[in-house]
Image 1 (tube, rainbow, N blue to C red):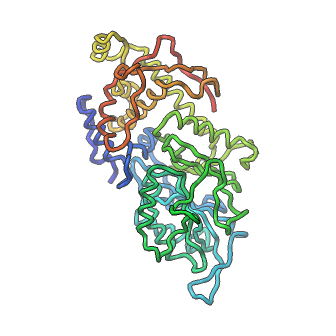
Image 2 (cartoon, helix red, strand yellow; image 1 turned 45 degrees about the vertical axis):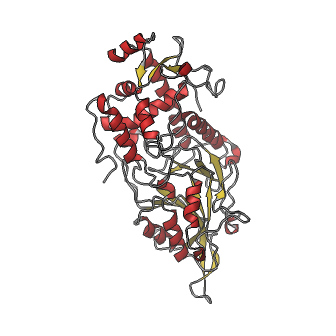
Image 3 (cartoon, helix red, strand yellow; image 1 turned 90 degrees about the vertical axis):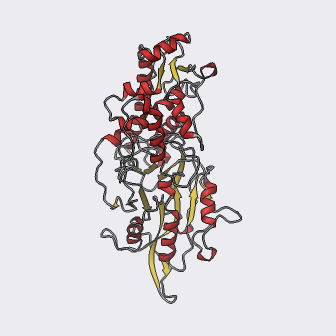
Amino acid sequence: MSLYDHTPCIHSFASFNYWFRAFDVRTTRIDSWPNASPSISSPHLNAMAEALKAIPNITRLSDCVFRILGQNPGRFSLQGTNTYLISPPESSGPVAVSGSDSDSSQEAIPSVLVDTGEGIDAYEPLLESVLLGKHESSKAKRFVTDIILTHWHNDHVGGLHAVLALLHRTRPPSVSPPRIHKFPHSTDANIEHKLASLDPSSAAFSPPPSSSKSLHTIQDARTIQLSDLLTEKITLKALHTPGHTSDHVCIFFEQEGRLFTGDHVLGQGTSVFEDLGAYMRSLQRCSKALEEPEAGVGGVGEVTLYPAHGPIIEEGKAMLAQYYSHRLERENQIIALLREPPPAALDEQAKGAGEEKAWSIKQVVAKLYASYPEHLWPAAARGIFLHMHRLAMLDPDAGTNGGELVSPRVKCLDTPDGLAPAIPEGNKAMHEWGKLMDHRWTLADASVAGQTGKL
């Protein structure tokens, strides 16, 4: 059953606030993790509205990479979460390990797992089949030395316990438990607490030395310190890419020149974000990183992206540019709309306050997304607010990448000095999001123009 099966359709704007709250409850796929923002783990409208491409449960993408589908399909997770198993080539990767019998030995390939899925039972046997060499594309056995979590959302970290239990059962006796790597975030305490609840005798994971924490810290622009068994065989460089979440990282696989994008870029549709300004800067950063000669691709040609949702992206540089231009296009549409006379009811309210041409988020969504089914509008409403929020701020990128605008381009008539309202978070988020839908917005001044720019 999909997440939208019980979401009420909106038949009038009078029901918008209730509808937004219902949408929030049913689209925040994070179970017990706190501080949820509405639909932040959800792909955007394009993917919701278009037919999804079929993705096999297990795919051998290259000599070094398996994609294993998380078995959690839905309107907001698309085909499900893509997890990735990265290993050295079979010709050079195997190492000698002890077998189940202490007197026996065997060869197996050390590997890295990127994300753990949501904890769906059907995922576990798929990962196990690859580890035990039972998939048709490879008979080589593998074991996981390191787990990398791209960000804190439940469809990426929710399967951690089940995966650790599986790895404990299948790990050769002579092999150390895996290390768990993550960029720091306020919700890490929840992961730490859950890991601390594991039976210490199970030795399910390897914590950092001389530390009370369970997670190994990922550092921006640094090579992730993997097991010694993978030294000079697998090199993974982290890029901190906030926007979708503040702790989000992309992972560059230097040996193959591939970028694991997590939820920063999706295989279908476009990602959603907590902070649009940070998200656009992260798009710029990824694009620049893929042009650098030291990135392993010489700055020439295309780069394949491995997203956490949807099919792989063969033309990664072009997709990053498309994402960036799409956001600028949406902002320009908003600015153009704010120049037009607003719907009559809101216009009269604005004139009473001595202002003209004020639009609410509800009305912007109804205008710009008129061709989309109304049950998809809540995701659009949140995105439109984040665009307004960015447009009401000083542009931190002014003077770079074609940006020429410094002053805020829009203002909110329902906040002091026209400043953007705070982005809701925490336990009161649902109520606050509903109220924001009625805030009135207008251009900061009549001379405001759209923005152009390239990555």
